[in-house]
Image (cartoon, rainbow, N blue to C red; front, side):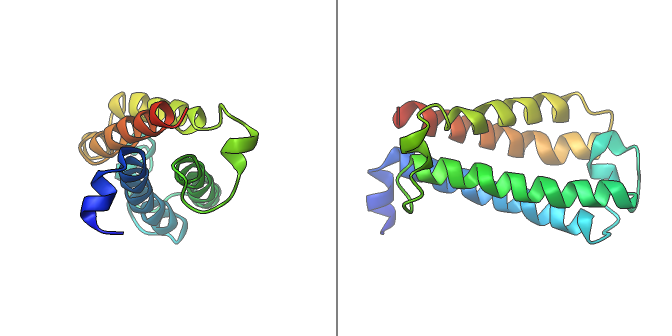
Length: 137
């Protein structure tokens, strides 16, 4: 698909934007799970450096859940043939709710590095997921 064709399908474009932003967050979560010292960028900066083992496991679980949310958004926009949204019509609103919660939590963080890094990403996720949910209903 060319850029011109993609621009002619706004839900598809927004779904790809959502998926790309999600990949960024997933890579971050996988880095946390692998023990990268990025603690100041998550959980309000309570664990600067490497996260404790249980939170590294939680980061891995979050990475998987984020991939499921991206699959929902892509399915809603007609990418692939999962059929989840066809079966459960309100499903595209789940990523919207999760993105809104993420934006609120990142905005309220006491960690400035976390806010500077993740608030813009959370805005992209929220706006693109709302667009897909509205355009595909």
